[in-house]
Length: 283
Image 1 (cartoon, rainbow, N blue to C red):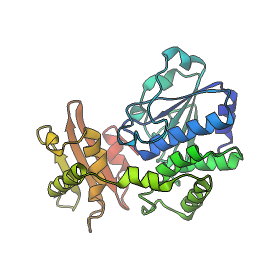
Image 2: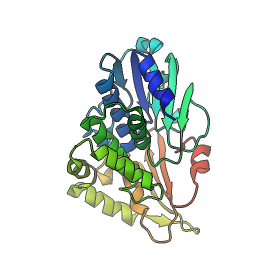
Image 3: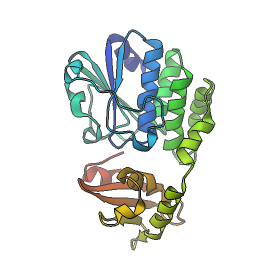
């Protein structure tokens, strides 16, 4: 399945890696993991990661985006990762690349790139990159494995979500065989300071329910400063606080910002993708 991806990487001297805006661990992990892979196996190539601020995932190696001129795209391969919709891709300069490739594990909504590898059977985009490396027989470095493992863990909900399969654990075993500190990943991802714990407690007190038992929180611009966190930490960082409520199969987090209302919608056993797509989202 991944032969074309390896062929494209081999054929281009310059590779620019994109992912979705407001990135999660899978987006950053896949992007930086692919960067480490190309650097280790094709050291003669130019490879860059672009996009918006990694926010809470800034602890990940090489998560800070590269600053590159527009002209570099004219002879480059743009690789788009973990993005189900063109509107969600961070840095729209990918459209000016000589060739484009998308690797994604979300439900296929529409073709985005010239070449597409999309498989919703995967728990994560990082899992797809891991399989691509394993099938290629090329080198897997500890830095690459650590990045991909981070995305595997976050998008599988620490291996608890229904998307987790026996293949997920095989990928985890393959990645851990490269040798890296898993403890450092979990400390960065899941340890909390008092400010975050207090904000989470406040968030829980604001949970409401619809008549159909959909859990939701709506945070206004006026309420937002009371959390003491940035918008991303309140929006995406808090949404799964509602995931363990018994009897709730759909939950949503609405956060007012100066640029509009951010909505994070999640589900267990229900397909909410059409709703997200209707309002310009997806995934």
